[in-house]
Length: 422
Ligand SMILES: [Zn+2]
Image (tube, rainbow, N blue to C red; front, top):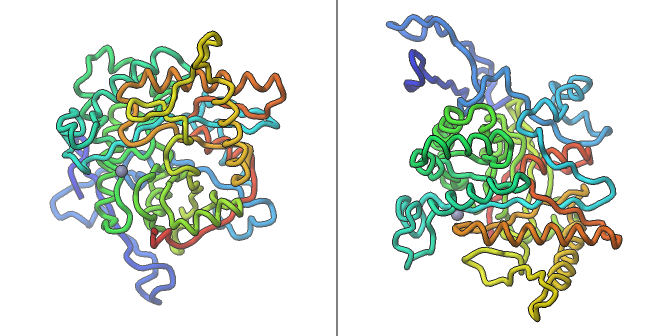
């Protein structure tokens, strides 16, 4: 229990026994708020999702494609007509404004992102301000400065941000005018928060109470600052070394619609890429009803495809489209890109691909990234007039999840951990 807002407190109860673990202690328990506190008169109680950022009755999560013939293995509260009614994508405000995938094409969702560790080789403040750059060239304040500037130039551009510790620090330093522009970017889905906890926590060596607490803290900042539009719907655990079923369960309880990660055992990954099983429905708990989570394994770690990192930290060539230049390279760049995508498409079940366009502390000079991605998208799509079936656009993880969900394909399931990680 902790003080919350005005005259309210946040309180959590936890049932420590699993379903069928014990004949007596696994039974449901009733708690009476009125008799809980000796000196407090409770006037109202309202339940939220796990991290306290949404009223429980407002929480609507996607239910995932298991195909018609497998509906029986879904939990009883999500089958039948209720399942169909609840899942209309337009009911989810965050998703309004997603680029529409094209029928009969491979739809490539470019997701510009920066992975910003909240303390690793440098301290949090050294990372934020970009000091001690001899240790690592990383200054998060410049990432957010330049990304917001580039987003404002073109409404097609998108960016996701993950670590609320950095975002909060940066946002507080901005003028009221810029804060208002950021609010607009968030409302229009051009800047989307994913993850949204104070930092991207490890999953192997943490206690789940700390995980819930640090999500509560980060999500509360987003809620207070951006309201419903700032509420992350996608888990983004791209750097933890292995993944726990419990973390996935927490995401389900916190109202998230999907989870992306990069690090799983290399043999498991190879196998999944060969067998078209990098995307699945994760059954996250044997006891809880809120127990499914769409989960997607990223294809190329969380990096851009090799040769397409247009960042100040990378050495890949830019897109050079002046045909008079001896360095003109658009034909080769697009040929190689399309070949890569066609290979990638062999591993996934829908006609959508998610391309992470970013890496550790990328976008400190976002003009380089966006200028070249603009051209990459433009010249890739120009090939459609010659019969290419590749359709590329700026997108976000929630737009990708929406598109995969709408494709309604049958997905494999998973019900244990992604440990050990090798
Ligand atoms: Zn990291």
